[in-house]
Each structure stands twice: as structure tokens, then as C-alpha cells.
Image: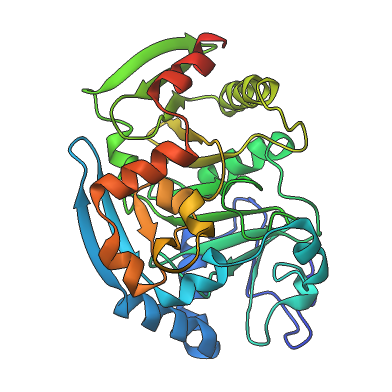
Length: 336
Ligand SMILES: [Zn+2]
């Protein structure tokens, strides 16, 4: 395969190509090498990591669940972004290859995706995997890509997805994200034996749900990607049927990783993207704009004021407002 395709106006080639062939280096290894190189060659990335390093961190104990609040001012670009269709239409899409900043490089992933370092990282090693074409953020047709990405990275990396109405800052451009596994509390909490309710097994997919995490979480584990994909699509169908607004996919966040011979997938069904407090003015405003990381227990507060204000109770309130509770999650699963 030729590797001289232009990623953006200023660079003339891909950092590497991953096509899944036997002779290709591992995706995790290539990503680490890209990150190391870009820290020296792309100043915006070094700035992003300096901001992450300087972020204030507060650990929250919600009893059955934990959260880590990260005061990262650089994330205001995503957290504060206007996401209405008009604004989105007018702005140059930051994931389109032609708009990538000068100095940003990519790994060409299986011909159709650019794997990029996220310049406003929430996690060390935070990656964005963006379609090369400007096509909408949409899961139904792309669950298999999500599962394949998790497989290509191998255990130790978690791939995550924000629905277009559940935290995606580019709802018009298909993308996934990835980070080292274990950095989000939910990744441990979802697989605790205690506090989990066994629901059923469908075509080899063991389905459980969590209890008492202030938001309902559906957990799947199986060794066949196609079977996991079917269950995810079924859940989306069930959620979609109860939507009054039939426009687009039901809001959700997903986390996926490989564990031994299995795929592990965590699905967080959402009611809406942002809590009402986000839209308040003055004292009452709280700038928290929950996407996958926040639902996973890493809550981003770009403003220091909100960082100090947030408590376990407030975070639980936000979770309850934007996500399904345990009962509502059980209701979805009873229809599977
Ligand atoms: Zn685009």
C-alpha cells in the first residue's frame, strides 16, 4: 500500500499504516510511537499534555462508586462547544483530513480511518480514531469497527464512543476514542461480582447490569464479536422505540476492550447530553458536559469554580438527570 497520501496541507505522508496484516506492527505499539514523536514535533500536543499534567484532581467517593474530577481548562473547547446543527454546519470540521492542524500526523488505520493524538487529552495516551470521510457519528453501521479496534489494540486499551447526542464534540464526523484501560472507575465497577445483576445470556453474550452506581450500566461479555454487535443493535432498537424524537440514534456511551479471549463492552444508556445546570446563568451554571469519560467516572470541570463546587451528591444528581437509572435500564433489558 502506498503511504504517500496527504493527511493535511502541510505533511506529505502517514506516520504509519495499519492494515491488520501479519507483518504490521501492533496498533498499540504504533500509537505509542506516534505519541512520542508528536510530543516533539507538534507543539499543540505538548501544550495539551502540559495542561493535563497541571490539572487539579479531586477524588470523589459516592459509596458504591467513585469518580475523579479533573479541572482541565483546555477542555472548555469541547465542554463549552455549541452543538446545534446550525453551528456545526458552519464551522470547519476539525476531524476532516483537510482541516487537521499543521504538524499533526496520523496512522492510516485499515484504509478508512486516521488514528490521531488528541491535542486536549483527558488521559495520558488519549487517541482519536476518525473516519477519513466526513460521515455522521453513527454506531449502528459501525459497531463492528468499534469491536475490531478493541481487538487490534489488544487488551490494555479501552476504545470508547460518544453518541451524537451524548457527548460527541463532532456529531457530524464518525470517530472513536481510545485510552489505556483502567483509568475510568467504571471499568472496574462494571465487572465487580457483587452489585451486579445477571440478566441473561443471548447467543453466548453474558449480559449483566450494575446496581447503585447512580447511573444504569449494561455490561456484555462474549468471545464472538458478531454476537456482541447484535446485542448492541438490539438495545439501540429498544431505546429507539421509546424516543419521542425519532431523529437519529438514541443517546449512549460505550466502552469496549479485550479481556483474555473475550470482548468486554459497557453501555451507558442516556436520556440527554447536558444537565439543565449547564444552561443556567451566573451562580447556578455548572459547566459539566457529560460524555463517555464523565459517565465512566472521570468528570471534566474546565472551570475551577465548578471543580470546587462538585460533590458526590451533585455528580449523582447530574448522572440521574442525564442517564438511565437502574430501573429504567432493567426495563430496556427485559425487552431483549
Ligand atoms: Zn469532518
